[in-house]
Length: 186
Image (cartoon, rainbow, N blue to C red; front, side, top):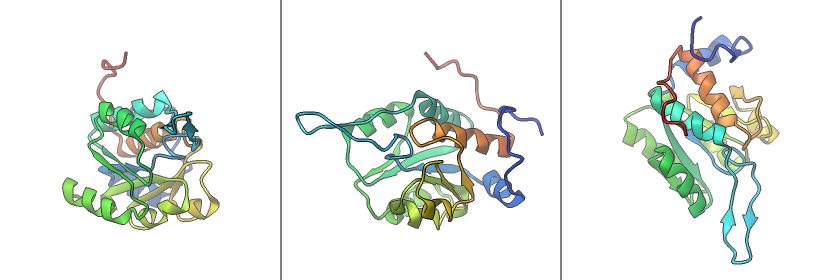
C-alpha cells in the first residue's frame, strides 16, 4: 500500500476498522483531554487558558487539505478554543454542549453526510453518545477505560500531545490519500 504517511503503521488495525476509516469524510473532536491535555489554567481574573499542541493544528490543516472536514463539539465555552480553531479553518464549532448528539446531528445535516461517514475522537464519558453513533469511534491513549471499550481505534498518543494528528495520519493512510504540500506552515 502506497500512501503519504509510510511511517504510520496500520497493520495492527482490524480489516473492519480500516474499512470504516476509508468511509470517513468528517472528523469531530472533543477539546478538553483530546486537543488539550485536559488541564485548565485559570488566571487571577478567572479566565481559562489551555495549551494546544502545534502537531494537532497541522493535523487539522492536513485533514482539510486531504478533503476530510473537521469540527469541534465541546462542553465548555472558552474563548481560547475558538481563538485556536478559527484560524485553522474549523467552521463547525459547537461549545457549551454537554449532550453532544444535537450538534453531531447538525454537523451531519450541514455537511450532507451520514453518521457512518463521521469519526469522533473523545476521552471521557461525555463523549460516549457520539462515539456510539459515528462510523469510526476513536479515543486518545489516556481516555477513560469505559470510553476505550466502545472505540474501534485508540491512539498511541495522549490527548494534547498530538493525538489528533496521529488519527488524521491514520485516516489518510487507510484512505491512501496524499495531502497537499505544507507550504502554508511558518
